[in-house]
Image 1 (cartoon, helix red, strand yellow):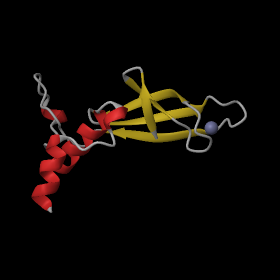
Image 2 (spheres, rainbow, N blue to C red; image 1 turned 135 degrees about the horizontal axis):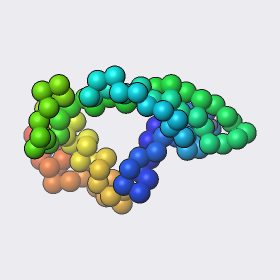
Image 3 (cartoon, rainbow, N blue to C red; image 1 turned 180 degrees about the vertical axis):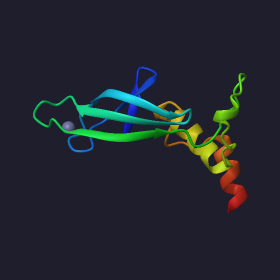
Image 4 (cartoon, rainbow, N blue to C red; image 1 turned 45 degrees about the vertical axis):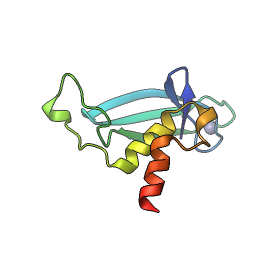
Length: 106
Ligand SMILES: [Zn+2]
């Protein structure tokens, strides 16, 4: 689970919902990392191992790496990214492109 945090992201504990501390991350490939996290809530104290994976390219790099070439995202993922990256106040409103997409698929 993630939530906005000063332009970055933070992981929230699956058990109690408090922020997690990422103790360590190991790069397995340029697009896949293993992460070890511990809940900051002393009463909870859970710890987890998980992964961070980059799935698609939304906008290609100006410095392409052949080992990190990901497929271009399908239109559905691009629309979801636009929605997720938009300021939270606009999340309930359809963007112009989303309206076009809905009209095209209706
Ligand atoms: Zn917790």
